[in-house]
Image (tube, rainbow, N blue to C red; front, side, top):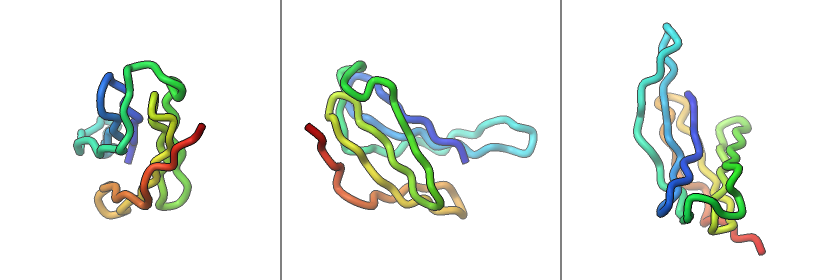
Length: 87
């Protein structure tokens, strides 16, 4: 699976994609992170870290970090905790 940290003005989300055998991507939708953005923000660099079956995503403008568990069978994300606010 491939994940992207979306940082539009408004609600942040993580885009989810399945990588097909030929290398093409199939969208599996987006999972809200609980953060908000003005499109720029403190975490404007948009970071995602995956370790094992856990995914962590920064939330621009909210100055927070969200964590998810990854379902290895289908790539779905489930919130692991309330976003941690920094600052």
